Length: 205
Image (cartoon, rainbow, N blue to C red; front, side, top):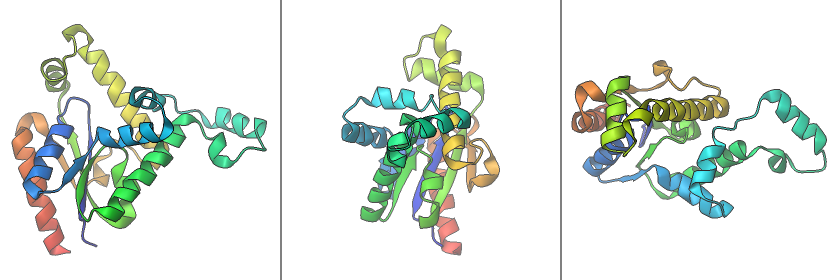
């Protein structure tokens, strides 16, 4: 199966969002990142920041079982915790986009899992902690004394959201077609490599 969609999972501060945009520009296609969260927030009528925080509050199976047993009259989706509802709504929006657009790049949002049946070229962007904290300070405006905590918190949120919703391991590089160290390669070269690998992979299919 040809992989017309590119999905990117990335560590905080690795530049995955920037690299995704660069690769999309080179291919002449759209790149979706935080827009998915914003579309979901608009449908829910709440702020993107609140939805983002919900990703940190994934319930344990025991608490979830108690919730279900306490509310037997409610529908299954009504019983779901907010973190699961976010994933379901984001999945619907992503699938709607895939029906309208033949090719695009999706950064985050468990894209390689949601779009697995449609065929996607999956990428993982990572970097060393020092480089990531430096980007957080210089590009994201994070205070130097708070950069490490911001990095760990964001990575934990992404990892938990991904692992719980997909049943896979976020940082397991075996599940991706391409893994790139942005600190060693730089954003521009990473984007070029994604485009080249994506095109050559599809030529072989």
